[in-house]
Image 1: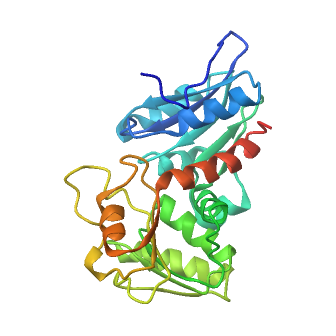
Image 2: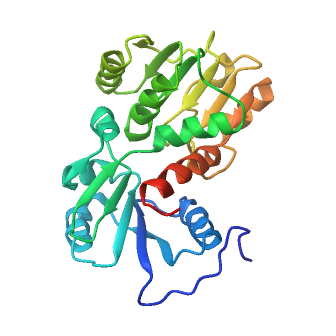
Amino acid sequence: MKNKLTAPMNITGETRVYVVVGDPIKQVRSTELYNKLAADKGLDVVFIPLHFSAADSEAAIAGFRVFKNLDGIIPTIPHKPAFLKMVDELTPRAQMVGAVNSIRCTDDGHWLGDIFDGVGYVNGLLANGRSPAGKSVLLIGSGGAGSSMAFALAEAGVGRLLIFDTIMDKADRVAAGVARYFPAVEVSTGEPNPRGFDIVANATPVGMAIDDPFPINPELLTPHQLVTEMIMQPEVTKFLQAARNIGCDTQVGYEALKGQAQANMEFFGLK
């Protein structure tokens, strides 16, 4: 049965190609969304998912360099660090965050890297009337997505931001960067106790697998908090379901994907 986002395609020798790369890849929903957006705009482009391991990233990147009809790359877990090292230029935002999840490939072979995880997340909040301005946020995870979210939330005017990561050195580095670029934000690192926070954001992949633990103890959540995910599948993770059972407001990861798609299409010049 076809997904409701499935777009009619007529792929020819003139079609420009964009790839979404990851390991695993089956959870990715962005190709459906991007192809639908492109079809609605009448654009002769196609977005395809590609699956390869981190051990093969060097070979894959070398291969991508030779394709003349490749206009963009969207790296997901675990490929963001490898592509960060291989781009020719970073936007100011990517320099600030220290990560990329979108690469524009120009006709002359130049690769420009940017990152839209955080922008997409904030766009998703705003689209649903949930402005983070002035709010307190517990951010769980400070990897590629989490670090991008930290800077985007700070740019959006959060009042207080606490970052937790199982590798606290990573969280400390992100917090130091936020403090440097956004001194008005009260930013710190520490244990992930959500009590007293307006928004609890899971920026880790914990919850993708059915036997994953919770990213934090959901029993510490309180009613009326906003609990959010970046995970695409399952759409409602067991963490979000536990939050709903407590009486929390929730936002699924797909909302961030839609917000990210908006920013990405503009970055690729697909208007």
